[in-house]
Image (cartoon, rainbow, N blue to C red; front, top):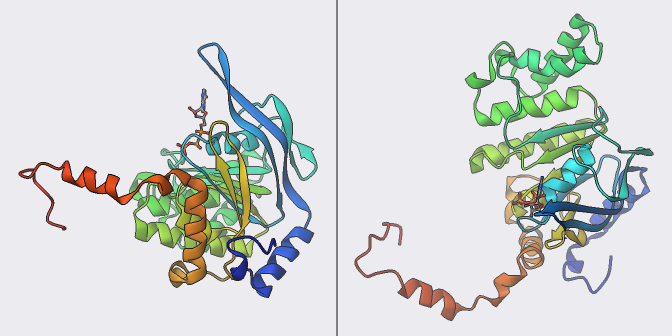
Length: 302
Ligand SMILES: Nc1ncnc2c1ncn2[C@@H]1O[C@H](COP(=O)(O)OP(=O)(O)OP(=O)(O)O)[C@@H](O)[C@H]1O
C-alpha cells in the first residue's frame, strides 16, 4: 500500500496480510479494456470507458459510484445480458459471450416466481439443469434451512417479508453453484434494520461457501461493511477511480460501523464518489434555509 494514501495508517499488518493472501489466489473475474456505449438518438454515448479490473477467488467486491456511472451496466455485461464493443470479460479462463450457469444474479426486485413455493423456487434451476427431483428437493431443503426458512418451504413469495424474499433469491442463485454471485442493489428496498440483518446473513453465507461476490450498491456504509475491496467508478463516462482495499478486519459486526477506521474510510469514499460536496459552503446552505417561508409548516423535529 502506498504510504501517501490517506487511509494508510489503517492498513495494519493484519489487513495487509489479508490483502496479500487474496492476491495470491487465482483470478475469478477479469475485466480487460472494457468499453460500452449505448445509442442515444442515433449517436453512441460512452457509458463505460477502459474498465480494467480483476477479482480473485472468494473475494467480496463492492462497486460504488454516482448515479449513472454504469454500475448496473457493468453487472449486466458480466452477466452476459448486454454486449460490449471492446475488451473482454473472463471468468475462470472462459470469455463471457452470454448468460451462463457460472454466474448467479440477485436484483433489488425479488425475482422469484410468484406461482411457485419457496422450495420450488429454489429447486427450479436444479431440475432445469437435469437434477433428479428428490436430489433437488433435498438440496433445496439444505439451502432453505441455512437461511432459517424451513417453516416457509411451502409458502408462496407473497406470504414472505422483503428480507425473507431476498434470502430466497440469494439461495436460489447459490443453489445452482455459480462461481460468481452478481448482486445489483439487492437490499435497497429493505428498511435499515432488515438491511443490516441481510448483510450479516450474506457475510455468513459467503464465509461458508466458495463464491466470489460482485455487489453493486449506492450505500457506502454497506460497501465498507461487506467488501474486501471497493471498486469506485466515476461518471461520464464510467471509469475506474480506485479499487480500494477496505482497511477493516473481519469478522465485521454491527459496531464495526462506529469504528474510527470505518468512519475514515467512509469520509474518504464520500470525497471520491461525491467530490462536488466539498464545494457547497455553509453560506449556500444558510441561504437555502432562509428561503423557507416563515409561515410554512415545519415538521416538529427541529
Ligand atoms: N439500455 C439502455 N439504453 C440506453 N442507455 C442506457 C441503457 N441502460 C443504461 N443506459 C444509460 O447508461 C448509463 C449508465 O446506466 P446504469 O444504470 O448502468 O448506471 P448506474 O450507475 O447503475 O446508475 P444508478 O446508480 O442510478 O442505478 C445511464 O446514463 C443510463 O441512462
